Image (cartoon, rainbow, N blue to C red; front, side):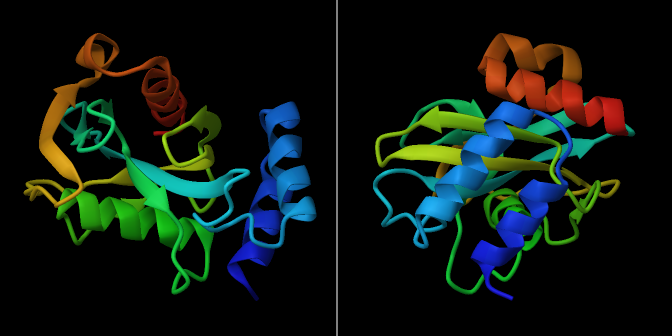
Length: 171
């Protein structure tokens, strides 16, 4: 199965945000290249909020290009076979924590936002950090930092705040 096909199945089984979900499905139906960065009309991206539920905190990255505190994530790659796998790959690469695991097999939220390259139709997951996890900054980040749940609204945009709320409801 292709990543495009996996994305369609994931989105069809996602039961929230019906209107936005349909926007994603319409995008994929109209654009066979809709998974890839080269699709300038917009493309599906995958991200994961890294959480440490025991210490009630999240790991955010200060994005090098956007200069905003965000969850880990980004563009899908040709080697990705699933959206969940792409989100986990991005989280591991950007956090430096190899032993992350997804909170659930499906997405926690969807978020559509404009970036310098195009519209991102982000499929957002949550990843659990093991106790004692040590992060390591990547080339895509200016900084990595753990924030207590109640600090996130002070440093991140509403999209990250909504993702944290949806994640906490599932922990």
